[in-house]
Length: 165
Ligand code: NI
Image (cartoon, rainbow, N blue to C red; front, side, top):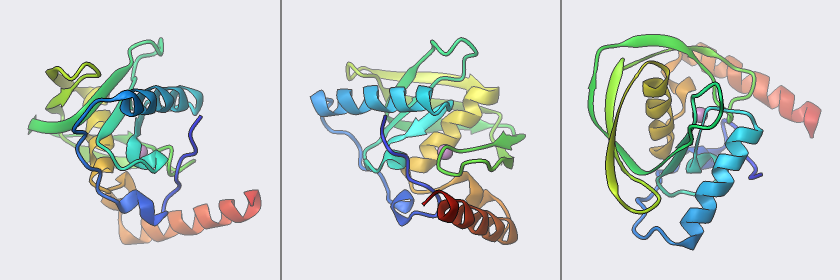
């Protein structure tokens, strides 16, 4: 299991580079990220969160936990509508809040064999795709919340870190 960076670690603000070559190190990263996501447990994880600044995300929103999606260089090419749901993040443990997102997205990406694919998603999967893709550009879901809420979250996580340190 890979260690997960916690908000407000400045490394979470780094912009991930596109993957040029899907080599053994990328395959290993994708495997380790999936294992880390399932173990946590979570429904999505971006490479940024494990301090690897490459454009790789893993997602599984299924109840059965057997519908793993690995997306390399994901890019939202269409989005419309809006939905608001509670979000959480493995980098912001214990914090859930409402965020407005597009209802439907189409994402273009490469799979692990380097084939170009598109996925169309609505509902939770659409939210998760937007949340994870945003991580790759260094943005956290809490940045959609008010300044006051962000300050409270920072204070709460700092307190937690003190207790567990
Ligand atoms: Ni997250």
